[in-house]
Image (cartoon, rainbow, N blue to C red; front, side):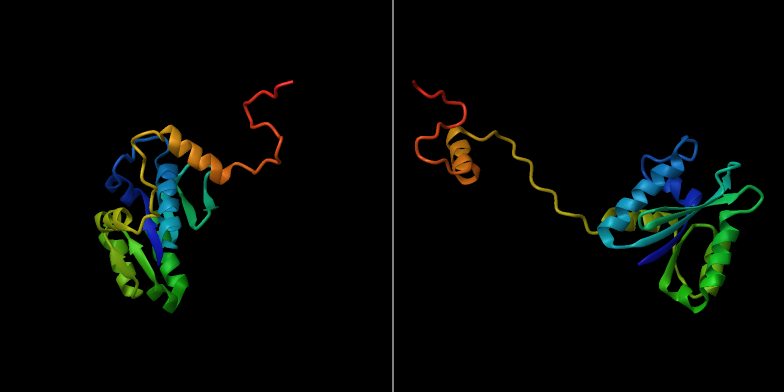
Length: 167
């Protein structure tokens, strides 16, 4: 799925992120990268009030961040992007709880998700299975079994690692 995300609108809905934080945009970008990696998604995220010298577009894997100059808004940038997509906007989902952004998305026939709905989708997206953590260490028999499997075969007469040769 492809998403157009109103970044500053989404940040307060992501647990652990705050708009007041110094790196709130990059923290969101990292979370969006993980979301894309797990689900094969593509995201364009828009942030307004970019500082001087910070305006522009940057790619972070499958996440493209648009830093909108002061005097304009992420909302307006998303609306312009929807217009530029034309009929292709139907293949995108717009993420914002802002009613004007939602209206622009609906006018373009894009899917709409509120920020809380998208946060839930991020939480429930398919996860890469994590190996179960073993609570108890291997016993000596298990260690020997693994060593037999993975230790390279030695030519007869060669000493085992850690054993001294007798002379």
